Length: 393
Ligand SMILES: Cc1ncc(COP(=O)(O)O)c(C=O)c1O
Image 1 (cartoon, rainbow, N blue to C red):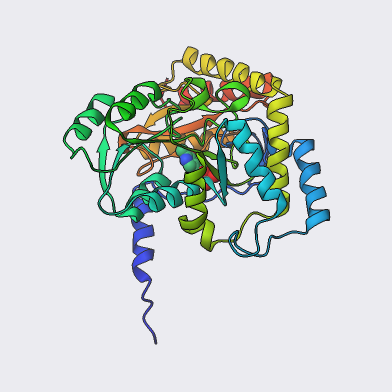
Image 2 (cartoon, rainbow, N blue to C red; image 1 turned 180 degrees about the vertical axis):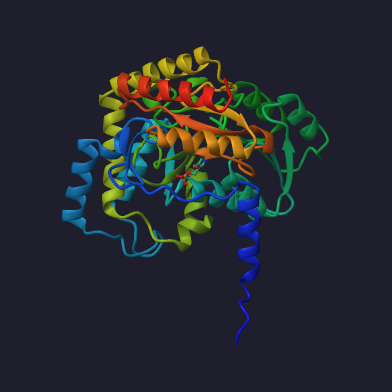
């Protein structure tokens, strides 16, 4: 009988189970919204990136349905062959206007936008200077580029400067940070990093995945929040989180975007968005511009929930955004907190090593604009009960 050449994967999985690092997928049985059903249980959902509730917004739903009726369900090709539809071009034009840049290219996801861009614009003679907590898609893009990767401690602009000072003046350098860090909810030090990039001739790139629709005027992101327009050469955003659908984009000058049309591998070698997705994203931009009260509700809810957790005595780290971690310690404790909260009707996913440091395992909460005060109070009451039961507060 043939020996299973993948048997070692089973051993790896057993090892994950022993270390409390194995997780079952929770199954969403209803819509992605603030109060919904996972694994047959009705829960307050604190685990989605659906910041503005747009996954179920009537304007997006209508746009997606109409686009499906008018254009079908798929684009049928990669962008560079037959898969560029008028809807894709309209979405790119609208995003460029929104981000106040010359041009935008849309990718299939935020992940492919980051990985595809970094790997396209750099090669082995170049250097990337990257925050240690930057997203995995940036790390993969850096690896694919074969550039030298220099990592600086989280938000330590002085350390980034020392790295750059040690590099040859003529070498091409990319300085890169997340706008909002996805596990701690803190902001990248954009003004100081932009100044560093200006003074040292670095290309400045910001991944604003968790800031799009959340920070800045009408949700233009951290670049707008910090007044850094024209100081950031490459902005990445996602259409999969606050925008409520799927995709990623790169915003910058015309040369950058045309170059990515020719060299970014996910753009060249993977099929473009279905019409429904592109149309829903366009409708989401209309909502951002015409319904600013949605973002206001997000921030009111964020303040209410953060204050509640802090009053209860939880360690919520250094968050400045609607992402609020509740630090539990090791992975066993974080899983216990998440599981007991789930039994109590609150879904807050545990985040463990290697996504975060072994001793900083946590549950991550994300408040949305569509949570009611009752939802949030219910969640705070559950956190209080469970936190006391397991000795966290
Ligand atoms: C900081 C950051 N960048 C990029 C991404 C990838 O975005 P997408 O889900 O659209 O692929 C994520 C999503 O997890 C993220 O948190």
